[in-house]
Amino acid sequence: MFGGSPNTSSEHSLGCLLTRSKFSGRGFRRDAATGLRAAVAPFALIVAFLFLSASHSLAADWPTYRADNRRSGVTSESLRFPLSPAWTYSSPTPPQMAWTGPAKWDSYANLRQLESMRNFDPAFFVIAVGDSVYFGSSVDDSVHCLDATSGTEKWVFPTDGPVRLPPAWHAGKIYFGSDDGFAYCVDAKQGKLIWKQKPSGTESLLLNDGKLISHWPCRTGVVIENDLAYFGASLLPWEPSYLCAADAVTGALDGPGRYRLTLEHLTMQGAMLATSSRLYLPQGRQRPEMFERTNGRAIGGFGGSGQGGVFAVVSRTDEFMHGSGQNHGVEGELRGFDANSRDYFVTFPKATRIVVTDETAYLNTGVELSSFARTRYLELGKRQTQLLAEQNKIKEQLKKLGNKAGEPEWDKLKADLQPLESELATLPPKLSACYLWRTAADCPHDLILAGPTLFAGGDDQVTAFDAATGKVLWSAPVNGKAHALVVANGHLLVSTDRGTIHCFRVGAGG
Image 1: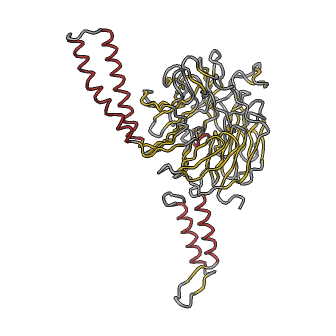
Image 2 (image 1 turned 180 degrees about the horizontal axis):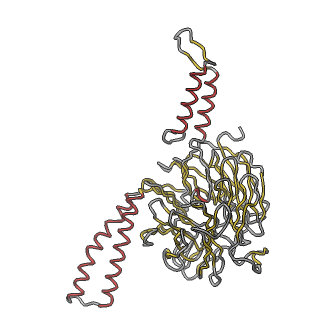
Image 3 (image 1 turned 180 degrees about the vertical axis):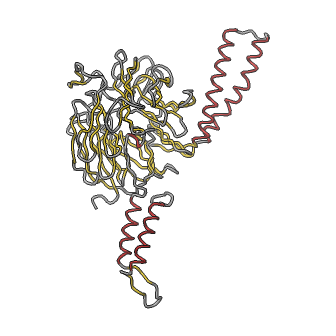
């Protein structure tokens, strides 16, 4: 394993192999000089096992968007370098995005080269389980299953609308949503339909980019939690939206913990997130909203109007971070909130992606990758936000009083302001001290953590960095902007905006 801790599962397997060899009574010879017994045939098996173990120790699946329902982008699997191209899937047509993208410029804030807040489908995002790779297509309106080793197609399941988000795998089944308004469940091995559910019912269709779609497309994906399938159907804020919890086996919407709710003033789009008690729904240009998972009760949103974006992650300690894209006066950012209280506590300017572990966080600003001590940084960030709020409150009070130096109320407010400003002045160097490393990196499109390695997606390239130091370990060209990265079962999968899926692995083509 490259740069990681001992692989206990591999050690256990190796121990079993040695034990079986020792007591088999076959394949041993006695050395004339030492009298030691040495394995002959089993030794070759052990060498082969060690090579495979070093190539992709702790092999793991990637069963849903960004690995899990919290959208962490983290896997325990690690890959050994260098990686080599194994196969490439190429669509004859690039992905057909649901939205045309941002305006050419924001004249109000004098910002150019804007990034979209609704770019949830710029590539064919994949998942990978066992020997299969799955993805949805906005070009041929289907879900595809490829062989992970060769890239050859196993099956295709067609729908009546674009499939914009990646499917989710659970218990041998594949779940996904389509612009035709249905949420689907199909058999993962053969692609046969098990159930489909359309919360909006019968309707007239809408012409969108040359295709007929539902007024309530399913653009949240499908999340599986505790054998329930959660999904939303939504498009326009002046139309009702639907939030559903269905039985994952049958698709039924009736029964304990299941529901079909009609909601108002929402535009649910982008991958839904889930924890043991909450659902989180991005909305593109509007703020994300949170719901009780068990009954769909609305809890509230994060941030103010227009603070949107479709990238989001919920840490294991319930910090909710979301954003990306531009709003007036802001050149892209990620914002952090307490997922329970919904209180804002930190902003990462110009950030496009963040990966959070228990001890460390990794930030991608498009031009720089950095690593910082997560707990200490967030503690200081929360304190800074609290102090700034108190400072602004006092300044507003002083503004209303005018310049009345010498009056008791004015003097008290000035006295209260001084310690706040003194403490605020100490925080920037403390925040800077939390950073473990920074390195220049022109890889703005994606960021994941696989074992001890960060993988970042750039324009026509994918690059691997040592997560402990920021050092570049490996890089390879790809065809287009690398918007989606997956590490699973010994493979690195890279999806680009040109409809290409590249597969890399150790020793491929050799």
